[in-house]
Length: 364
Ligand code: 9MR
Figure 1 (tube, helix red, strand yellow):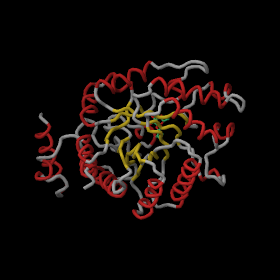
Figure 2 (tube, rainbow, N blue to C red):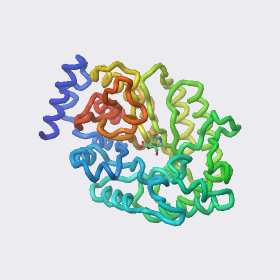
Figure 3 (tube, rainbow, N blue to C red):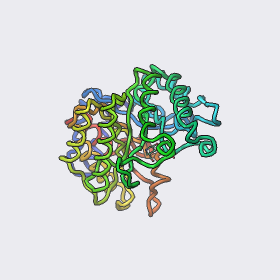
């Protein structure tokens, strides 16, 4: 079916199911067909995370991915445990394929992630220590970032380095990197990445920055302080990745606090990427129409707040279709129904969350 007909059909279905004008025909009929096009109208990038193993075997998904997305984030393939079979070796088979795939389909590529406390290979604990940690860090970053230099839109250089609950004054997460190298591991990582690829946008990426809870307020404060310290030392951090793993429940957004945080980040001269957006539907009642509406509302509420900030350059969902989502395994529903956290359903058709994204990406 050509895109316009599909959209009109979708609008009709959604309108009749929800009794709302969310996707009224007049809004939809002369609009673009895909999320990347809505985003582009407003100088934004829309994209999603996915994996080599999915793109290699699922042609229908791949076709929809290329239609909807302007940027691809390998969800796991760039992680240490995937790239580093042994202390002295790299296996670039999958990331090379992904890089060519992105180029062939005019997708920007986002690298995730160079330094994280998780997804480390088994050999890491026996091999890496205080004496050689800096050498390993520099070798890892230089080898990978040089290999893909010029082909990467942005690198998540450091991921999830903040954890106020760990109780340190600086709000940093206790991790092997911090233990061996102190806070300098973050500086070293950004400097090394900048030297290896001066073109990629170098990003600090973290989660739980969205809600109006004391824990997330503490994380916003600690993240901002970290970024301020890095900028004060001229460390080449250029963007903040706000992951955006949202959830249905009693926690709420506070537009004033969230916008103030983002403005403080922007005032440091940083861009902002909504880097891992999805909505956990675990606590919602079973019927998918209610779930889809609640999930779409959370997308809408969140994006209405964050997309008022001009420093935002991209919105990336952590997966595109409910067919493939980490939440299936990590946040399954008690009733064992399929989770529905993403813009497309299991059959690759747009859901209300897609509509919410389409509207929001135009910055209204
Ligand atoms: O979605 C990813 C899942 O498939 C992996 O098993 C897991 C561990 O590597 O990482 C998940 O992605 C995480 C991302 O890398 C960093 N932010 C949180 C994401 C969800 O846990």
